[in-house]
Image (cartoon, rainbow, N blue to C red; front, side):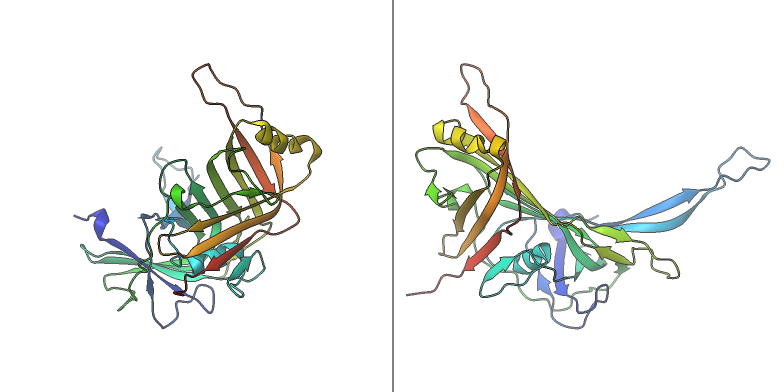
Length: 305
């Protein structure tokens, strides 16, 4: 019998997509690893002297799933690079066209069963900042190949990071068009979603059941911001009609002083007028879409003075 507490995950960057390299694996800090191969089949339509099914045949496999985690500084920087199809340059990450793939191992160590997912691309990335609770990250992975083993795949992996996980209290001043919302439009929750719009390309003439390639198309960046209804919130909401982009910026700083700064230089706003009963707090949920200018994440490691 197996325990969820004994499911461990490791990751290594690939040089060639779908090929696990030799080298050191890193330990992933996750709350869940839902990676799995899902076999696609075709059922026989053969007609004979029996009414029974004549069985099925495997045609392909979809390989992937969600990696879920509590956000902590420095723990997921490689996956963030892959999500943005970019590179950290002078500690700044933005949307680009650089493909990053990984081999990810999933080990059920208490029963001695180990899996490896190869050619893992970040299909979507989601960040959830609640009104009261932990900041969570979800990386949906789309992979090229799968294998399993009774022997550990990640041998002597590196130790996981030890930076503290983050909560809503770690979010700093939120700026809209360079002006703080503090005191004029209380923000109660935020989300960020990045969809690389991956398309699986199937190839015949190969023994691999997974796709021959995962092709990134449009980078769609969206999210929500929940505001207490106020005159300032109304002014921001009015951009729904003009399509005038607004800029959003905010930092997330951990208890050690490490910081991520999220900047959205141009987002378009959509939303409905809020409503509520006499015992309700009136809030407006604004949906935003990044347009024309790419968002950035800046990482600022704490340096002892």
